[in-house]
Image (cartoon, rainbow, N blue to C red):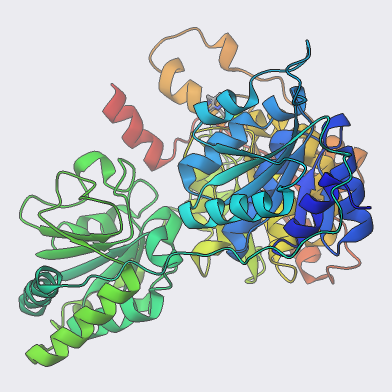
Length: 550
Ligand SMILES: Cc1ncc(C[n+]2csc(CCOP(=O)(O)OP(=O)(O)O)c2C)c(N)n1
Ligand SMILES: [Mg+2]
């Protein structure tokens, strides 16, 4: 008869196709049932943090729910950094873990519920009689609140006979937040009037707008008002008409494009939390700009917001388009006067820096030319994040994943690759990582190469340092030794797990990327470019942070 673990596996697999994990005592029976009794695909990762990261990246790239799994105790505590990231980034996933027996903790148990709670994740513990229903409740919680949920199987319960797996109800999910009632209607009318009368209207959209599926409605609103548009780093590519789009706002934005934002008289922000980076530490808008925000948050999320309208981005954008039509508004004509391509132009870099190592800007620009169009960029954290964000534009927000940025963690890049590769099975997955974050995540180099194969490309920005620390604290005069890393041969590490590694010391060495890009994905190897860059070239976004910190 099916065990409690089988009840969890079978019920989970009715809603989830992909499970990422590391096996141990606490999830052995769950994994056995998953393999034997479901059609779900299990992908072995090499570190439990990587398992959560892969499930997280899978969701960011596909919008679908995935699961991670780890054993109790050490397996579970290994997930905590990645779990905190998913909580803070509002990414739903289910983490299936073993837990202490119902009789109480053994010497190697820790209070897992308290630990999960401390990073903001709720735990659902299955019993003998309720495993299927509890599994659905965990799924529902994850999806409804857009958070990770922990599903715990006590050690003594895991193998208990639970009888036939019962049918469990479908998870019930809340609908989009509809602005309703006379106050909401008046707010829409007033905002439409402000936009209709604006001479230089500007629309900014973030990941919330992407999640609500607002792209088309926002495109219609931009057309109706003649607005110039832009997105946050997590909302890139949201607006349909690139010829009127300034790209990403904040430190990754082009300087001239950011100057233009300050000329707007009316700005409306959809589904963006307006964090300090998007807001250029307060300088994104000029004091003369009337800033309105549309979001599902309970209230405005930045002091520069003068008017707040609570509601789903797609619904509000459509309501505004309709209202503008009813008011007989005409487009401002502002965007047609602007040469967006010139404003978005990037520095080409110097090729080679004074120390003989490569200028990352020149490398990034060349790699950007060679990358396949159908790509998903996954990024670790560190100084280098500027290069992909500035030089490798992507077509939509689900094609640029930065797992780790919400919690400001490095070392979550490599395990993002398998999640993205399974979420977008036709696309090339391009990892951008530093040497520091790459070393931290090294266990899952093997997983990345195994899962992505010839669809995988890794670019390691090898500056022999925790460069972000050098830029922030080394330049302040703090001891540099702890910030330095010996030059690591990442090309050799790649070869050790079956990938092809290329050390890139000159621009000519990038030619291997050109030939690789022209080979069919199923015959070529995973390619890792170990790019030896100068540490002297500091990305504009980091200069901004240095300015603010000093
Ligand atoms: C888990 C974790 N440990 C330490 C840090 C502090 N930290 C932030 S950026 C950074 C340097 C990253 O180095 P690398 O990956 O080589 O990228 P680079 O900055 O050199 O471009 C460090 C150590 C962090 N954010 N997260
Ligand atoms: Mg580095």
